[in-house]
Image: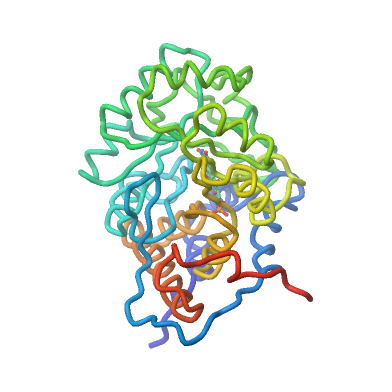
Length: 355
Ligand SMILES: Cc1cc2nc3c(=O)[nH]c(=O)nc-3n(C[C@H](O)[C@H](O)[C@H](O)COP(=O)(O)O)c2cc1C
């Protein structure tokens, strides 16, 4: 018998076969012409690895630390909305698989369960809460306090969605959210048809750097700022007390025409130095993609679509397999690169491709 699931693309194909076309387009698509979406993945071919030989790789680990806590691989589960579109168990299945893999699950505000319910699904697992900030401050305060009380270990504020980008696949498919999809972390009911426009009523688009002070005063968790694409904003995040930044363009779903994240990473790392941890997401489909991000200074990466495709292809088990596939690819890559651990991957292990 031939093995069907050899790499992440195989899970994407299975997800395409299993999902309703509108939902698959929602998960897999980007904004505008999808220039940034394509760039996020294509950029990995523009960087090449520089392996060192005759290094003792008899004892290789893929484990590393993020915000001081150990993860079994340098891939975290990115926050993604509406996971029940992929599998009836949605976020709960994703959380259990992340726990099995020994990595962090970032829960989106746009999930079908509360932080307390997610924590109960995977007791003792590492979970971060991703915030879309409601216009109702009292509600926002309750939400982030609830996450802290539920045992979440970081608050991730997404800053690249003052309004939602225009995802043309969704427009063409007239994609609407199911009426029965619960969204308990929103201050009011979300219209199901043009839900991206409807987010405007819930999400505060007047926020500035100054508002972070209030957020930090009501939430004791370390703050991770997600959606940084310039060294200027990376520095502002550090100055405003962020513990980490995520170099992210929202998987090519917001402003089309921004650079692929891997190309932005060096300027951010150079600007912030050791002051904050730098994470990266966008286009991670292979273990060697992760190695290139580490070489350019990321502490770890996050995966959005790869794990969503795993969820759609096989529920909790599908996500577990995708994460294990990535872990094995990273392990093999580390061995062939001559690095006993993710922390040993340095800038000298990568160069720009010449062709
Ligand atoms: C279907 C989908 C939903 C998403 N929902 C959210 C969200 O609710 N909050 C958020 O901060 N980012 C969200 N993102 C962006 C991801 O966190 C992440 O930045 C992106 O998926 C990384 O790119 P990748 O999918 O190529 O790995 C979403 C991405 C996708 C694909």
